[in-house]
Length: 145
Picture 1: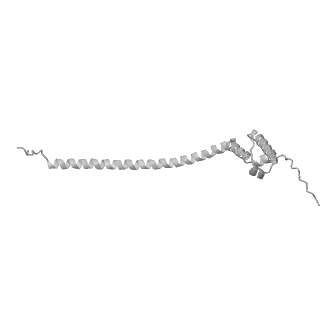
Picture 2: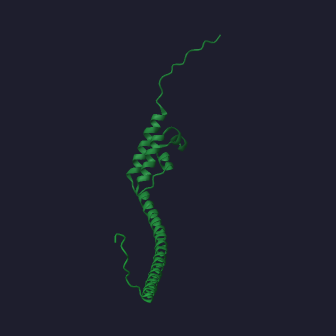
């Protein structure tokens, strides 16, 4: 009969801890060189860790990498380029709006001039009618007399 001996479970060094330190060192090394592009693949290659492991077990390091990528010089250039494209598109739209506003101003000015000429003509017609009637003031009898 075989007797099973309990295996002594000596604490093994956590591979995740060593992978974490290797990834942190790789990230710090990559961040020190601003001209180099920092990628997940490059950090995993430097640390000797699979990308799957980084995505699955080391999310804080991945977030730190994304923050660096988001605030790095290439992101600023891309953001400036994108904002320049957005400004051009906005300028084109504003120019179209200016043309529409100019047409609207022309329309309202023409309507104003037409209305003013109509009022002048009606005032002349009323003055002519009054002159033809030859109205004189009339004394009204008072009720108290």
